[in-house]
Amino acid sequence: LIVLFTETKTYEYQIQKKYIIPYLGTEKEGDDRLRAFAAPQSSEIVTLISCWPYATNSHSIVIIAIPAWQGK
Image 1: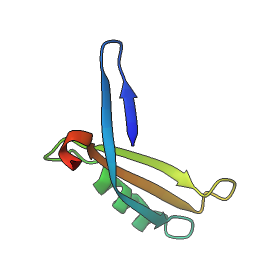
Image 2: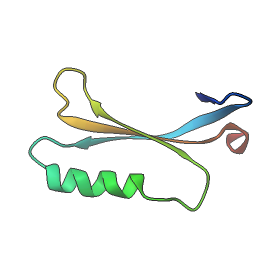
Image 3: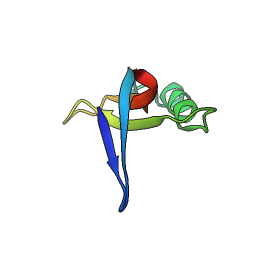
Image 4: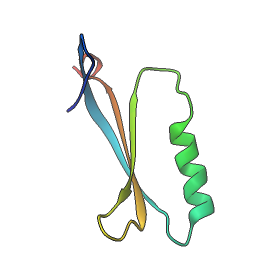
């Protein structure tokens, strides 16, 4: 579960998918894939993108989550 807070409201999102994308040595392809995840979507989702694993950062990790009420 991912929980986002504003000053007045809390939003809960259920994780739906996780992608591990090779990056070191394949930067062009990795950038193209990450750009697709970062593009506007047709439905409400949260997309988290980070380097992975800790210390080597040889890959990117992408987490996709939808509003928790949709996942029930």
